[in-house]
Image (cartoon, rainbow, N blue to C red; front, side, top):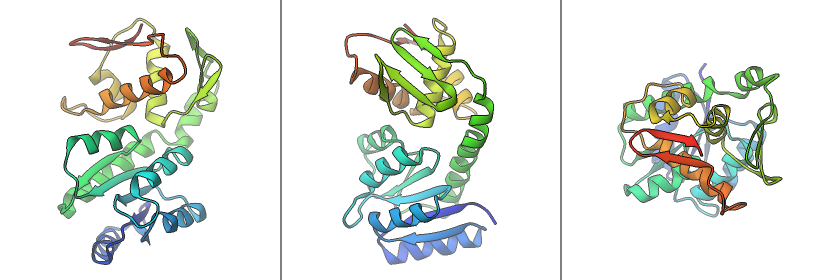
Length: 234
C-alpha cells in the first residue's frame, strides 16, 4: 500500500473519480468536502499528500493551505483548480503549495505530479532531516540566527516561520556566505531533483524568504541576486 492521500474537493463526481483513480494505483485515501472536514481528518492522521481544491465551502483552499503548511510543513499539497493565471500560481507557491494542476486535468499527469511531490517530500522528510541535522552547529549571519537541529530561525531575536524548503535554501546560503549559488545548485540541493531550467520555484522561495525577513528588519539586505548567475548572502 502506498502513501495516504487526502482528497479535499466539494464536487462529488471529481472527488469520487480521484478516490477511484488513487485506489487503483495503490494509494490509501480519505475524502473531505470542506476545509473544516479536512482539518478533522488531518488531526486524526496527517496525510503524506493532499489534493486540494480552492473553491470550498466555509474555509477556502487558500486558508487551508496556509494552516496545513504552518502546522504540517512536510505534507505535500497539490492545488487542483480551474484558475489558470500565473499570479494565482505564484501566490499559492509563495504560500507553500508543492504543485499546481489545472482542471480539467489528465489523470496520468496528476499521478505523475503526485509521485514527484511525494518523492521530494520523502527525500527531505523529518526522519531524514533530523538525522542529517543531528550535531549540526548553530549558524549566524548578521542578525539571522539558525538552529538546524530545531528548524528554528530568528532575525534580530524574533522568530520567523519558514517552510521546509525555505529553511533548506537559507541554510545552504548561510553555510557558504559570499558564495554564489545558481538556481541549478539550489534546486538540486533542496528539491533533490534535476533542474530543467524553467522552474520558477527557486525565485518564488527566495522572494518568500526575503519578505519574511523584511517584516522584522526591512533596512538590511541579506540575500543578493547576482544577475545572470544566482544568489548569495550579501
